[in-house]
Image (cartoon, rainbow, N blue to C red; front, side, top):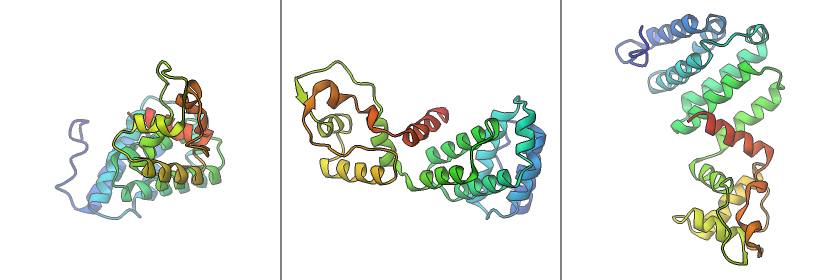
Length: 221
């Protein structure tokens, strides 16, 4: 299979697709091939397999030239196989391509930088599952580098309305509350008047967990 046609898996039955995906990963990154083969057997059919196929091809390309004895030992562990299974299951069910790319970026980092506790990794996977397109847009708006100040006073609500002109204030407020509940933002006072610089620089309202999510999003572009 060549790189150009590696994603064209429409002429084979589902069992052959699974074998083809596993073969590609084993060829590109031999030391990851075993865990991938073990997990793929549990993935559903059709469109879901195609989503997993796309993720694993990008994952393999990112790791093709990567070498690390620590990583090679890590992928042999039960923790990694469980993490791989959880990630691929979510990817197979995720319709949003942007979120599938975040899952791929997450999995690559887990291999390249092993050591994070499995429970913390699982928490992050659940976070990805609960964040949707409008959440991501609000987080990106919060993380924007502020432009030159204009005016003497302002509020976070005004700033977000400028950055998200197609969202009404009630929708923005609702999304911020949801993000606060997910612990990725801590913005409590949307309408508090403050200096223009304070109202426009909202990056501090994104938690370390939220910034990690944004970094995965950036890495997946």
